[in-house]
Length: 275
Image (cartoon, rainbow, N blue to C red; front, side, top):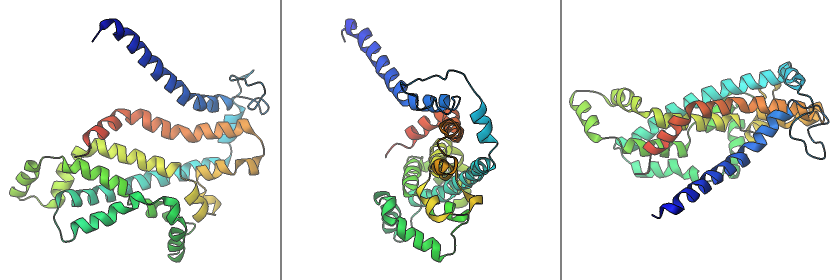
Protein backbone atom coordinates (compact mmCIF):
# COMPACT_ATOMS: atom_id res chain seq x y z
CA UNK A 1 0.00 0.00 0.00
CA UNK A 2 1.19 3.49 -0.84
CA UNK A 3 1.81 5.14 2.54
CA UNK A 4 1.14 8.59 1.07
CA UNK A 5 -2.54 7.62 0.83
CA UNK A 6 -2.73 6.00 4.28
CA UNK A 7 -3.07 9.15 6.42
CA UNK A 8 -5.72 10.87 4.23
CA UNK A 9 -7.79 7.68 4.08
CA UNK A 10 -7.56 7.26 7.84
CA UNK A 11 -8.56 10.88 8.38
CA UNK A 12 -11.49 10.42 5.99
CA UNK A 13 -12.66 7.34 7.88
CA UNK A 14 -12.49 9.25 11.18
CA UNK A 15 -14.48 12.12 9.70
CA UNK A 16 -17.08 9.71 8.36
CA UNK A 17 -17.45 8.01 11.76
CA UNK A 18 -17.68 11.40 13.47
CA UNK A 19 -20.33 12.53 11.00
CA UNK A 20 -22.41 9.42 11.59
CA UNK A 21 -22.06 9.81 15.36
CA UNK A 22 -23.14 13.47 15.28
CA UNK A 23 -26.08 12.70 13.01
CA UNK A 24 -27.21 9.87 15.26
CA UNK A 25 -26.76 11.69 18.56
CA UNK A 26 -28.08 15.10 17.54
CA UNK A 27 -31.82 14.28 18.00
CA UNK A 28 -31.10 12.71 21.38
CA UNK A 29 -29.04 15.68 22.53
CA UNK A 30 -31.68 18.12 21.29
CA UNK A 31 -34.39 16.20 23.18
CA UNK A 32 -32.42 16.21 26.44
CA UNK A 33 -31.51 19.91 26.18
CA UNK A 34 -35.07 20.85 25.22
CA UNK A 35 -36.13 19.57 28.61
CA UNK A 36 -34.30 22.58 30.09
CA UNK A 37 -36.12 25.08 27.86
CA UNK A 38 -39.22 27.13 28.47
CA UNK A 39 -42.50 26.18 26.78
CA UNK A 40 -42.06 28.65 23.92
CA UNK A 41 -38.39 27.92 23.28
CA UNK A 42 -38.58 24.30 22.09
CA UNK A 43 -40.13 25.04 18.69
CA UNK A 44 -38.79 28.56 18.38
CA UNK A 45 -38.17 30.01 14.92
CA UNK A 46 -35.38 30.49 14.02
CA UNK A 47 -34.03 27.28 15.54
CA UNK A 48 -32.03 27.62 18.74
CA UNK A 49 -30.23 24.58 20.12
CA UNK A 50 -29.44 25.84 23.64
CA UNK A 51 -31.96 27.58 25.94
CA UNK A 52 -31.63 31.22 26.91
CA UNK A 53 -31.85 30.18 30.55
CA UNK A 54 -31.30 26.63 31.78
CA UNK A 55 -34.30 25.51 33.85
CA UNK A 56 -34.90 22.34 35.87
CA UNK A 57 -38.64 22.97 36.17
CA UNK A 58 -39.65 20.52 33.44
CA UNK A 59 -37.72 17.64 34.97
CA UNK A 60 -39.03 18.44 38.44
CA UNK A 61 -42.63 18.62 37.25
CA UNK A 62 -42.51 15.38 35.27
CA UNK A 63 -40.94 13.52 38.20
CA UNK A 64 -43.67 14.91 40.45
CA UNK A 65 -46.37 13.44 38.18
CA UNK A 66 -47.60 10.18 39.80
CA UNK A 67 -48.81 8.85 36.43
CA UNK A 68 -45.35 9.23 34.88
CA UNK A 69 -43.56 7.62 37.82
CA UNK A 70 -46.09 4.77 37.90
CA UNK A 71 -45.69 4.18 34.16
CA UNK A 72 -41.90 4.11 34.48
CA UNK A 73 -41.99 1.68 37.41
CA UNK A 74 -44.56 -0.73 35.95
CA UNK A 75 -42.79 -0.72 32.59
CA UNK A 76 -39.44 -1.42 34.22
CA UNK A 77 -40.87 -4.27 36.31
CA UNK A 78 -42.56 -5.77 33.26
CA UNK A 79 -39.38 -5.41 31.18
CA UNK A 80 -37.27 -7.19 33.80
CA UNK A 81 -39.74 -10.08 34.10
CA UNK A 82 -40.05 -10.29 30.32
CA UNK A 83 -36.27 -10.32 29.87
CA UNK A 84 -35.71 -13.09 32.42
CA UNK A 85 -38.55 -15.19 31.01
CA UNK A 86 -37.23 -14.72 27.46
CA UNK A 87 -33.75 -15.86 28.45
CA UNK A 88 -35.08 -18.96 30.23
CA UNK A 89 -37.50 -20.07 27.50
CA UNK A 90 -35.40 -19.26 24.45
CA UNK A 91 -32.14 -20.65 25.86
CA UNK A 92 -33.76 -23.97 26.76
CA UNK A 93 -35.40 -24.23 23.34
CA UNK A 94 -32.14 -23.31 21.62
CA UNK A 95 -30.23 -25.99 23.55
CA UNK A 96 -32.81 -28.62 22.69
CA UNK A 97 -32.68 -27.84 18.98
CA UNK A 98 -28.89 -27.54 18.94
CA UNK A 99 -27.74 -30.51 21.03
CA UNK A 100 -30.60 -33.00 21.42
CA UNK A 101 -32.07 -35.51 19.00
CA UNK A 102 -35.79 -36.19 19.07
CA UNK A 103 -38.58 -37.20 16.71
CA UNK A 104 -39.69 -34.47 14.32
CA UNK A 105 -36.83 -32.17 15.26
CA UNK A 106 -36.51 -30.60 11.81
CA UNK A 107 -40.25 -30.08 11.51
CA UNK A 108 -40.54 -28.47 14.94
CA UNK A 109 -37.56 -26.23 14.22
CA UNK A 110 -39.26 -25.08 11.02
CA UNK A 111 -42.42 -24.32 13.00
CA UNK A 112 -40.46 -22.35 15.62
CA UNK A 113 -38.53 -20.14 13.18
CA UNK A 114 -41.43 -19.46 10.79
CA UNK A 115 -42.65 -16.44 12.85
CA UNK A 116 -39.33 -14.73 11.97
CA UNK A 117 -40.73 -14.22 8.47
CA UNK A 118 -44.22 -13.08 9.50
CA UNK A 119 -44.73 -9.34 10.21
CA UNK A 120 -46.02 -8.76 13.73
CA UNK A 121 -48.77 -6.48 12.45
CA UNK A 122 -50.11 -9.32 10.26
CA UNK A 123 -51.07 -11.37 13.31
CA UNK A 124 -51.96 -8.48 15.63
CA UNK A 125 -55.72 -8.98 15.36
CA UNK A 126 -55.58 -12.76 15.79
CA UNK A 127 -53.25 -12.35 18.78
CA UNK A 128 -55.73 -9.94 20.34
CA UNK A 129 -58.58 -12.41 19.84
CA UNK A 130 -56.57 -15.18 21.50
CA UNK A 131 -55.63 -13.20 24.62
CA UNK A 132 -59.17 -11.83 24.83
CA UNK A 133 -60.64 -15.35 24.81
CA UNK A 134 -58.15 -16.35 27.51
CA UNK A 135 -59.28 -13.45 29.73
CA UNK A 136 -55.83 -11.87 29.80
CA UNK A 137 -56.77 -8.30 28.86
CA UNK A 138 -55.77 -5.57 31.33
CA UNK A 139 -53.22 -7.75 33.10
CA UNK A 140 -49.44 -7.60 33.25
CA UNK A 141 -49.38 -11.16 31.87
CA UNK A 142 -50.82 -10.06 28.52
CA UNK A 143 -47.84 -7.73 28.06
CA UNK A 144 -45.31 -10.44 28.92
CA UNK A 145 -46.41 -13.97 27.96
CA UNK A 146 -47.31 -13.56 24.25
CA UNK A 147 -43.82 -12.36 23.31
CA UNK A 148 -41.61 -14.51 25.55
CA UNK A 149 -40.88 -17.22 22.97
CA UNK A 150 -39.08 -15.40 20.14
CA UNK A 151 -37.90 -17.28 17.06
CA UNK A 152 -35.12 -14.79 16.33
CA UNK A 153 -33.64 -15.22 19.81
CA UNK A 154 -33.94 -19.01 19.59
CA UNK A 155 -32.07 -18.92 16.30
CA UNK A 156 -29.35 -16.65 17.69
CA UNK A 157 -28.73 -18.80 20.79
CA UNK A 158 -28.93 -22.03 18.79
CA UNK A 159 -26.09 -20.85 16.57
CA UNK A 160 -23.96 -20.23 19.65
CA UNK A 161 -24.73 -23.66 21.11
CA UNK A 162 -23.93 -25.35 17.78
CA UNK A 163 -20.44 -23.86 17.94
CA UNK A 164 -19.65 -25.20 21.41
CA UNK A 165 -17.25 -28.22 21.44
CA UNK A 166 -19.04 -31.56 21.53
CA UNK A 167 -16.14 -33.13 23.48
CA UNK A 168 -17.03 -31.23 26.67
CA UNK A 169 -20.62 -32.43 26.50
CA UNK A 170 -19.60 -36.01 25.75
CA UNK A 171 -17.16 -36.03 28.69
CA UNK A 172 -19.92 -34.79 31.01
CA UNK A 173 -22.27 -37.52 29.79
CA UNK A 174 -19.60 -40.17 30.40
CA UNK A 175 -19.18 -38.84 33.95
CA UNK A 176 -22.90 -39.38 34.53
CA UNK A 177 -24.18 -35.81 34.19
CA UNK A 178 -27.78 -35.37 33.09
CA UNK A 179 -28.84 -33.10 30.25
CA UNK A 180 -30.16 -30.56 32.76
CA UNK A 181 -26.82 -30.52 34.57
CA UNK A 182 -24.94 -30.09 31.30
CA UNK A 183 -27.18 -27.23 30.27
CA UNK A 184 -27.12 -25.43 33.63
CA UNK A 185 -23.50 -26.05 34.61
CA UNK A 186 -21.71 -25.97 31.25
CA UNK A 187 -23.75 -24.18 28.61
CA UNK A 188 -25.37 -21.42 30.70
CA UNK A 189 -22.10 -20.19 32.30
CA UNK A 190 -20.51 -20.00 28.84
CA UNK A 191 -23.44 -18.01 27.42
CA UNK A 192 -22.89 -14.62 29.07
CA UNK A 193 -22.19 -12.77 25.81
CA UNK A 194 -25.17 -14.12 23.84
CA UNK A 195 -27.40 -13.80 26.93
CA UNK A 196 -26.54 -10.10 27.17
CA UNK A 197 -27.44 -9.58 23.50
CA UNK A 198 -30.72 -11.47 23.85
CA UNK A 199 -31.52 -9.85 27.20
CA UNK A 200 -30.97 -6.31 25.94
CA UNK A 201 -33.02 -7.03 22.81
CA UNK A 202 -35.85 -8.33 25.01
CA UNK A 203 -35.67 -5.37 27.38
CA UNK A 204 -35.64 -2.83 24.56
CA UNK A 205 -38.45 -4.60 22.74
CA UNK A 206 -40.67 -4.50 25.81
CA UNK A 207 -39.70 -0.99 26.88
CA UNK A 208 -40.35 0.54 23.44
CA UNK A 209 -43.54 -1.40 22.73
CA UNK A 210 -46.51 0.82 21.96
CA UNK A 211 -49.09 -0.80 19.65
CA UNK A 212 -49.61 -3.97 21.69
CA UNK A 213 -50.02 -2.23 25.09
CA UNK A 214 -52.47 0.25 23.58
CA UNK A 215 -54.50 -2.64 22.18
CA UNK A 216 -54.65 -4.87 25.26
CA UNK A 217 -54.33 -2.52 28.27
CA UNK A 218 -56.77 0.20 29.30
CA UNK A 219 -56.20 0.08 33.07
CA UNK A 220 -54.39 3.31 34.11
CA UNK A 221 -52.40 1.36 36.70
CA UNK A 222 -50.82 -0.70 33.89
CA UNK A 223 -50.12 2.16 31.49
CA UNK A 224 -46.73 1.67 29.86
CA UNK A 225 -44.28 4.52 29.45
CA UNK A 226 -44.73 4.72 25.67
CA UNK A 227 -48.49 4.90 26.13
CA UNK A 228 -48.03 7.72 28.61
CA UNK A 229 -45.82 9.72 26.25
CA UNK A 230 -48.08 9.09 23.26
CA UNK A 231 -51.12 10.50 25.08
CA UNK A 232 -49.18 13.36 26.66
CA UNK A 233 -50.37 16.10 24.27
CA UNK A 234 -54.05 15.24 24.67
CA UNK A 235 -53.66 15.10 28.46
CA UNK A 236 -51.29 18.03 29.07
CA UNK A 237 -51.53 20.24 25.98
CA UNK A 238 -48.56 21.66 24.08
CA UNK A 239 -46.10 21.59 26.97
CA UNK A 240 -43.18 20.65 24.75
CA UNK A 241 -40.48 21.19 27.34
CA UNK A 242 -42.27 18.86 29.74
CA UNK A 243 -42.69 16.25 27.01
CA UNK A 244 -39.00 16.43 26.11
CA UNK A 245 -38.04 16.01 29.76
CA UNK A 246 -40.29 12.97 30.07
CA UNK A 247 -38.95 11.47 26.85
CA UNK A 248 -35.38 11.97 28.03
CA UNK A 249 -36.03 10.24 31.34
CA UNK A 250 -37.84 7.43 29.51
CA UNK A 251 -34.82 6.92 27.26
CA UNK A 252 -32.26 6.86 30.10
CA UNK A 253 -32.73 3.22 31.22
CA UNK A 254 -32.18 1.86 27.71
CA UNK A 255 -29.20 4.15 27.05
CA UNK A 256 -27.53 3.16 30.32
CA UNK A 257 -28.20 -0.51 29.60
CA UNK A 258 -26.46 -0.35 26.24
CA UNK A 259 -23.53 1.69 27.60
CA UNK A 260 -22.96 -0.71 30.49
CA UNK A 261 -23.09 -3.86 28.38
CA UNK A 262 -21.66 -2.60 25.07
CA UNK A 263 -18.54 -4.77 25.39
CA UNK A 264 -20.62 -7.88 25.96
CA UNK A 265 -22.87 -7.01 23.02
CA UNK A 266 -19.94 -7.00 20.59
CA UNK A 267 -18.49 -10.22 22.03
CA UNK A 268 -21.90 -11.90 22.04
CA UNK A 269 -22.54 -11.15 18.39
CA UNK A 270 -19.05 -12.37 17.48
CA UNK A 271 -19.32 -15.60 19.48
CA UNK A 272 -22.73 -16.46 18.08
CA UNK A 273 -21.60 -16.13 14.47
CA UNK A 274 -23.46 -18.16 11.91
CA UNK A 275 -22.14 -21.70 11.64
